[in-house]
Length: 184
Image (tube, rainbow, N blue to C red; front, top):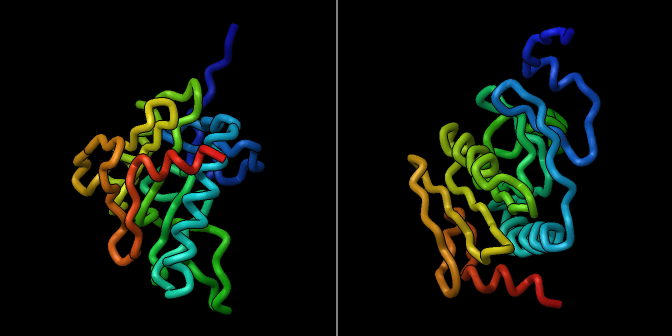
């Protein structure tokens, strides 16, 4: 005989110990992310470096890898988030806060092998519903980037297509350029 358990609350989830890889709280369920692999890690690292090189010195924005963001009833850990400088949570001392209980301005997900594109896209749509300005779903296998705009408008880009960037960040990126980061 199985015993029915009550769905987890967000508060209960946030009290649980962190897992590696991270677990997320989506639709009242705890779901562990897949372990990142080579292409995923390279894209994540390179994207953060490129954004931070142009945006951080001018105090425009900061890109963070694997940062837990809790908002709209869910607690997610996108592969990369970008926060505008003025929205980064800080403590009274001026140091960066540990907890980010707001939506990111830009959320990037990198599809891992055997990961459900629908589930990953649903996280980007959740972000969009709660104020995120821009979302990317990077698919290394297909070499495409699905872009989520406000009002959940979606566009699929590939090849030489220019990528939309969070306003204020002086970057000119093309889809093929992002995937060229995978070649050493």
